[in-house]
Image (tube, rainbow, N blue to C red; front, side, top):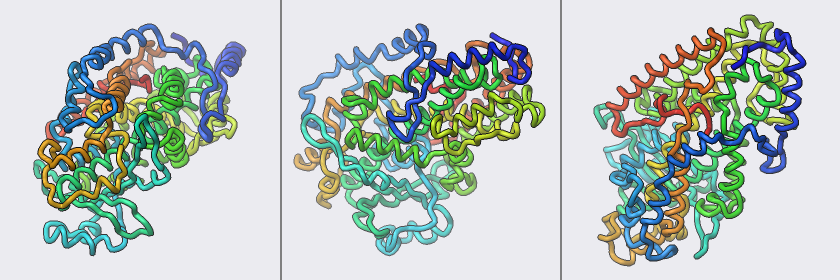
Amino acid sequence: MMTPYLPQNDAEPQKRLDWLQRNRQDYQFDLDYLPPLSQLENLPLVESFSGKYISERLLATSELPANSLAVNFRSLWDPLDELQDYEDFFPVLPKPKTIKTYQTDDSFCEQRLCGVNPMVLTNIKQLPLNFVEKLQPKFGPSLNLQQELNNGNLYIADYSRLSFVQGGTYERGKSYLPKPVAFFCWRSSGYSDRGQLVPVAIQFNQENGETSNIITPFDNALTWFKAKICVQIADGNHHEMSSHLCRTHLVMEPFAIVTARQLAQNHPLGLLLRPHLQFMLANNDLARKRLINRGGYVDELLGGTLQESLQILKNAYETWSLDGFALPTEIKNRGMDDVKRLPHYPYRDDGMLVWNALKKFVTNYLKIYYQTPQDVSQDFELQAWAQELVSPEGGRVKGMRDRIETVEQLVDIVTTIIFTCGPQHAAVNYPQYEYMAFVPNMPLAAYQPITEELSTPKESKSLMPFLLPPKESKSLMSFLPPPKQAAEQLAIVHILSAYRYDRLGYYDNEFQDPQAQAAVERFKQDLNIVEREIDLNNKKRLVPYIYLKPSLIPNSISI
């Protein structure tokens, strides 16, 4: 506990400077490991996991070894016989609820709105050439595509930006990554008279803006099921490398480095940010050693080669900016902000409740210390913080001001940082077990070429492989991950999602300043109100969305 002071008001400036100079030696940038990202060179000892953290995290994942030992494999490499065999991977661990619904169109669509990666779906104003002419006869009077487009009710999940991925290898051959484009429509009538998202089509091999190789719900059931699996595979790869690893873990890493280098131990902003940056550098260091290393989980499980998967990450970084990925802006940029047009979007609705409570808290806290524009402009540590964050030799943060003039500007920046480290990371990390542990719902790679798998005889009607002719059952199962990859996927998503270190707004070391502590208490009350509102929302939802409940959001990227 320490008394907060802005640097221009501190009676012990040399003490501040000495502390910062030691930190600048310990926190060095590595600009060459994964350019253009800016990362930490060596992890300082002070950033290591605490004993409490290690013991609690081990306890949270203690059932995994017993579960792994209890799984009975006939072969690590041969395809399983039927989809139900993947349920046998849970002899000890709880089975995800998705097992009961994953084959349905309702589940497929709902995952675009409140699944593990609800940041892809985008409202569209234009369809590919000849799209309406080709598909309208299949829908007949049940759905007027041109009218729905004109009314702003059509949406797209576009994974064609993964087109550079040629595919990786595993011990028995090649792995593949589909690059589909999925189209959806919001229908005003549906569940509880609220409406629902329905699938329209899934397109492969889009070229020159024309329609080709389009699968619809009117095609035979097995072909449509495989097409949905392809979307899930693409979404899983996009989630892990873009929405999760890049746009939470790695884009926030420079803030942890620069905060340590430029904001003194008793700087009010440093005191606010550090709980929201806790253990992130240690987790990112662990990810570089075990997740994105040669032979690591990304290399072994995702659809492309390691270099291709890392390129997905780099591409995600190139299109990220701090201001563009503030929650209200990011949602608006995808055309997903209109509550009347799209009344059901739990990620948006719950996220905005948390965002507004957080922004109110950040405003109340910062205005304690920055009461005039001069307090901001004369804070030389704050200005050095901003400058190093945008510097090509420092943080390389896009969409960040290199000079902060007003407290309102600082509030916007800090709200985005804390939201990304806490709520946003929670929204992409903790659903992993529910949606990715049961591998058929979201495999991380395909194990047969995509075009072959979508060439299914039209007379096939059933999804269930034990009811299919032997040839088709074998085709479907050989498309999905073999037992070794399935077991590893289950293991890593359990490890990543089983543990929460703390709770948003609850701090290990309470703020010494009574005014700051009062702001924290008001924040907790506001979060309790948000929690109750989310609980009420969930009573009206087809699938409860729990991942942005404040009680389940950690302060930081601590896993």
